[in-house]
Amino acid sequence: MFKKRWLDIPVGYRRLIFLSAATLVLIGTAIVGFMFLEDLSFFDSLWMTVISVMTIGYGDMYPVTEDGRRFALFLVPLGAGIVTYGLGTAASYLIEKQLSKKVWEKQMNNEIEKLEDHIILCGFGRVGQQVYRQLRDQDEDVMILCVHDNEEELLEVVDRGTLRLIGDPTDHEILEKARIKQARGLITALGSDADNVFITLTAKGMHEDLKVAARAEKDGSEEVLLRAGASRVINPSNLGGRELAMSVLKPAGTDYINNLMRADKKDFVVGETRLTPDSPLLGKSLEESHLRRDYGFTLLAIMRGDEVISNPELDMTFEEADTLLVVGDDDCIRDLNERVGGSTPEMEEQEINKNPEWGN
Image (cartoon, rainbow, N blue to C red; front, side, top):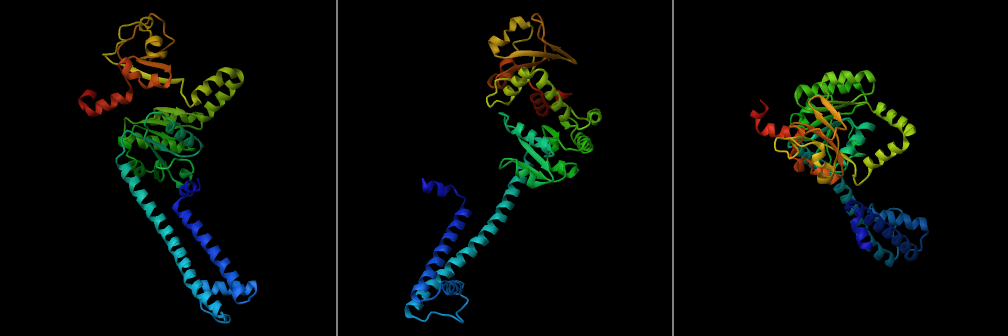
């Protein structure tokens, strides 16, 4: 058990513990030895120990007995060895720290240069940190690239190995380094509406089809961000205020939804799929489809063009290109597209990229 706990301690700390213990044992042994062999006081023995271990030479005090000199012959090389080991350990730690940092930065830059279909997160305040945690906890493999101007703030929250880019997210060159043209989406969560508008404009100018989700602090900023090209605009204050009000007006329903959404095992997950020409649901009515029995999910709404049909009637027939909004458990939603012959916007975009003529 002790050996396992010892091995769990990082190498640098193990060296420091060993060096401290060896130094204390050496000094304690030397003090007792000089007090016994040379008949010195505690302070004089400590003084003799220090000048012996540090090899600075004897001046006003030196061993006078034969046993004391023999003891000093043993003490001096041992002390010099421990001091040398300590200096070497300190130098090694500093060099390794700098070297490992450089190696990690190079590896991270290489990984960033190969990124595709990733999500860029700009800003890492309170809202940005919650966005990161939500993306990180998703079951699907989501590649996240955090862009922030303060590395220390990032390292306090992100997991080890998380890709990060240190710099001003409003800088055009930083967004280029983030491979925005190959990105799946961008989330701008800075505390300044002006910065979020600027990032949205810059991002859409560099990648016209990029999906941008933006944070807004003021009500009037939502329309501005949408005009700048944001696909979605979220006002955290409005959402928080709405939930606070509903927690008083309808506490049971609010608690139920929150508990389901925050549970480790997702029993309530919202998914969407667009029906393709080979979907087995085409031409069938909602009643004939038996979605709950055969597929395990519940239909919330159908998006048909610009129309949203909530709680559709049982005799409504599914058509090609209908987007189904459904709820179900994790496993059901994960296999949704395969089971109903559907696709997501991300899947369609990937197919168009592989076959550019499809988009014409």
